[in-house]
Image 1: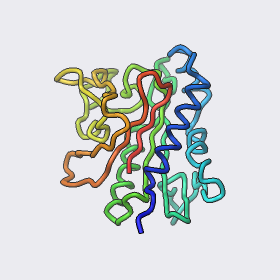
Image 2 (image 1 turned 180 degrees about the vertical axis):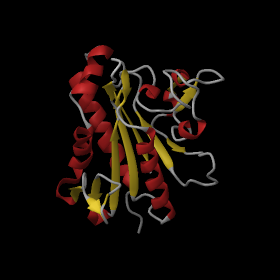
Image 3 (image 1 turned 60 degrees about the horizontal axis):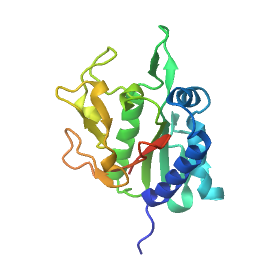
Image 4 (image 1 turned 120 degrees about the horizontal axis):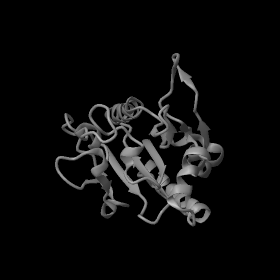
Length: 220
């Protein structure tokens, strides 16, 4: 018997969360919204919002360990065998006073690798990786390390950018600052065409519009 997939549950939850944050922060300037994003929100704020609709069915696995290592998911709905990993994008102030990514790319790669491995084990529609962020920077590359090497505006790393099929390159050669959202690809199921993978069997939903204060990317 066919049952609702993990992406179908998460879709409605994420859309309601965007609506909630629009109501709360929609009147703020980009500068004030950036302060909220970096100083008043953290990953747990988003994780709780994603888990709330599951009520007593959900176990918050943040910090849990398996065989001595941290488990690769933050939410576990045992009755449906759903496992969800969550990442929230924000910036830290670097020692030079500028903004730097709060997480290294290695942390995201680990989560993508976990999801791909779960897909290979047959857990398609039972596993998901959700990334959420406030829409208050010019490019998502200000949150994610999508370039090759160091520097403020390096050339893009094509292997990393392939995980985000909702990004558009403004020009070629492409630097990280040239990556913008392709809102025409929002709210539709996208396939990941990953370099070195013949069939990743992974899809993506990009949720948000230019006027929304918050965006989600659901990988499943």
